[in-house]
Image (cartoon, rainbow, N blue to C red; front, top):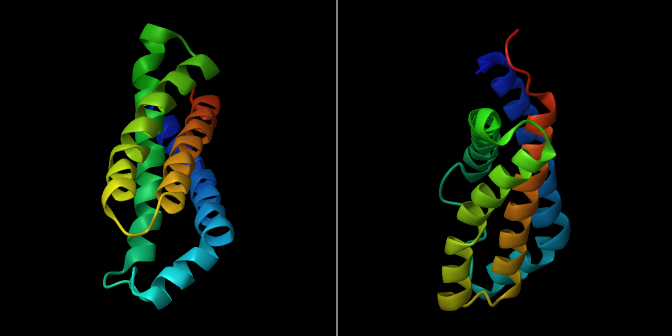
Length: 139
């Protein structure tokens, strides 16, 4: 495996995924976050340094996608088909369980967890495709 290309692809994937996440949470859900804060369903301000940790976590997921793509490549072959296979596994693991539980048990309703789950899946898909496009084996 080419560690430098994993880091390059992972950081590029993380950047794209963070932008997509900002659109999902800002443009699509921003008004709902404010309304939920006013209703007491969500805190108005996070109790942790949430934004920094969230952004770093998304970059870590991007690097993880790049690593998994590089690891799967010898068995599944290079290219978008392998990137999509990796993304389906990561996107499901990232987006479904916690959001299914939130949709089932929280007073937030179904829309926010649905958007979070779909965003996670789409971000994983695009992130894996970016990471896969930038990955090259060592010569």
